[in-house]
Length: 150
Image (cartoon, rainbow, N blue to C red; front, side, top):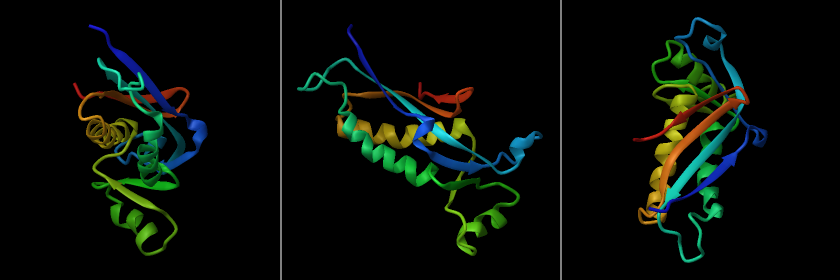
């Protein structure tokens, strides 16, 4: 069976500046720190569309906007962070941070959340013709995490 894959990348040079902390870490990762995150999507199909494309790359604008809302100039906090109230107040009361709350933080969870959004969007757009294989989130050139829904 023939398959076709395409890859869409929003590199770390795009400037999705995101701060977060992993409060359970014993390393400096327990402190608020940030990265210019990058995102890589792998899509696959066995059937090209009427333009001989797997997917219209222009449709990634909706996904890019979602990424900006969640990971661009944001402070992502875990819903179970012991400093949750203090961190949330940076946005709610002080207005000095765009706070995004997630169940957990880290590239693995960022990749999963991005996959969940993008997978539904792509599946709806293509009536299930295109499968999102994986989403990879980069902190920088040396560190990344991949989420696949097997």
